[in-house]
Amino acid sequence: MEVVVPVDLEATREWATANRAAWEIAPQIETVRGEKRQTGYALTLYARIPIEIPPSEERTRAVLASWDRLCLIAQSLGDRCGEGARVEIDPFDAAGRLRPENRFEPEVCVNARIVHPGHYLDPAGPDERARLVPLEDRLRELGLRPGHW
Image (cartoon, rainbow, N blue to C red; front, top):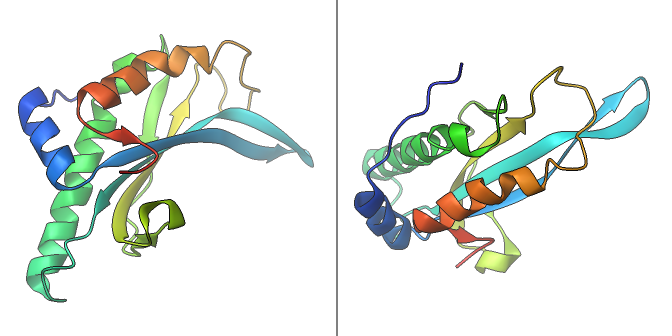
């Protein structure tokens, strides 16, 4: 059973607005015996890197704090993915992200997989996308925007 981490709704909304937090969901594609198949969904959470802080230990601490906050948000979504599904978070990646849809402003991101019940490499079922609606609703409720600000 996955442990779901609670988050403070109001504090997270304020943080999400101040840090321009956003999210994207895309198909998770794996190659199985030479054939590409969708095995679930990839979730990416973004927050701005505070470029007003000069490159320093202070900025590094701010980036790590944002990454930790995004991880907590991702961990809090486990019960919103459907029965038996889980959220698996990738390790920290120190590289900032520059996305054209966000005017190339540097962002820290958390990459996670939404893994359906059963074997990881089983194909995603036809109803799996619909099962993510509660997860998307929760991200909106927490103040994150779909795509970008």
